Structures are given as C-alpha cells and as structure tokens.
Length: 170
Image (cartoon, rainbow, N blue to C red):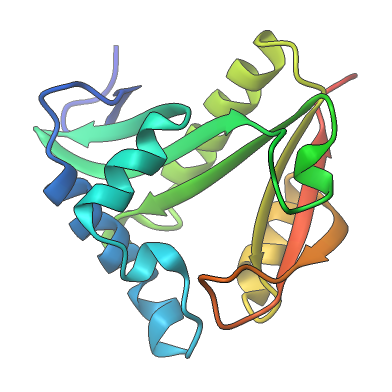
C-alpha cells in the first residue's frame, strides 16, 4: 500500500493523454533547454511522444490522476550509436519527472523498476545518453553504477552525448 497522494508507478494506459505526457516532458526538460541544450524531449510534439512510447515499454508515475513522471525502455539493435547496437543492450530514454517532484526519489523508483524489467527480459546492460554538458545527470547516473562507454552526436540535438551503461549481471 502506498501513502495517500504518493505517485503510483504503472504502465502507460491507452487512456493516458499524449498531450499531457508531452507537456510533462517539456516542463521537465525546460531548464536544460534554457541552458542551451536542445534535448529532443524539450520540444518534441505529441506524435513523437507517442512513437517513442510505442518503441518499447513506457512507465508513468500517476499522482491523483496526473502523470508526474515517465520513462521508456526498449531493446537496442538498429542504432547508429555503436554501443546501442551491441547484443544484450537495452536503452532507456524519454525520462522525466515533474520539476516540483525532482530530487524526491521518484526518478530513482522508475529507474529501479526499469533495471529490474530489463534484467528480467534477459538483457545484460542498460544504457542511456545525455549531453556532455549535463553534468548533474552524468553524476547521478554514475552514482547509480552507470559508466561512460562512448559518445554520439545525434542529428536532433545541438550537443555531443555521453553514452553511459550499467551492467545488470551480478
């Protein structure tokens, strides 16, 4: 049982609003955009949000009927990023927490869930990428056991990304 008002983590439902989810992404990524980092999630439209959710398994945190956090994980394979194309690698992205709820542990709960789901699905690595200039995110992932494994320059961003990965084997 969860405390009253505490977000419930669940799979994205067919009744959930992609407009609401897109707005959450824009709010969560706004400080990065204001710092000059053009993360795709900071400006993507509803169609892109839907497509990215449908690429894998999308999880949300629901607080009193409002989506306050989200994350998507999927299998790698057909990527232009060399690390993502490796066998056994799953990728997470479109990861966002409502700004007022950041640093409350909610993002950690989502990542814990994704790490468990990815391992259960038989993957041995969970990877992500973030802007080289997003030092707080890089440090946060490093504290969770992610290590730098490469770099990539995406066509949709204005920065080079650090690729990070975590081994899911004991």
